[in-house]
Length: 335
Image (tube, rainbow, N blue to C red; front, side, top):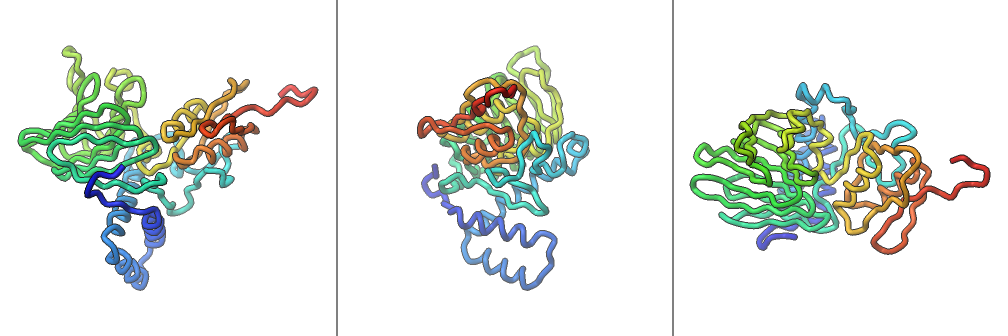
């Protein structure tokens, strides 16, 4: 969904931007830079696509450079496939991070919407859509799939209400106007910082990527608390100050990164982005955990990768369903 006046950036431009990012990494080739300059200047959409992809990749590495990121148990190259019981890099929907990876940013079968907010506006994303919104104050919001955000900018404050889904906020500094994000159960106050707010789980979850935020719970007895980069906290107070990994911060890239995630949780995560739904035919005898990175808009690739790793079958009972099921037992087999 693209706002009136918003720029539409086709998939081919994103693919070209990804290739340029990979080619320029660690290079100091004058001829290459001349060619890059010609490409950037040829179309204003080239600069937009390149900057978005570059910024998103830098956000993912930001946490790895911090102390909390280095002490996480996740691997530094989180998209590698590991162990026989995990997803192998078979080309069935899994992406492998090798050297400088190609990042697929906001490509979901439709145009990328880049919108400029008025003083008051409501933004919604469809299933499978991730959208970047440039606010009038210079801040940027990235809305995840099936999300809804209300924005009200005034001379005294910037108030945003996240009604459903998930969003990333990159806040422009403004000492005159506080930046508030309101959710059920409380609000988050930020001054020139970057953070995620998610309503996907049972309780609102705040993840600080850079800078710091203040958390105000609606409960009058709850004290205001401040949290810094790399910390993740739920408004119910049960998940206080937990470290967040670079993998978790990369949802804006359109990749689902998993690390020993229970199969049922992995399926639920991929289903959020698709009208084609993956179903588990039955509870499996042994716990199955998935490690890897997958394009969120490729449910069939995800299902086939899981099936190949765990010796399952994929069936298509109807156009809207992918069924993961155990193969028929052989006679005399205990499997």
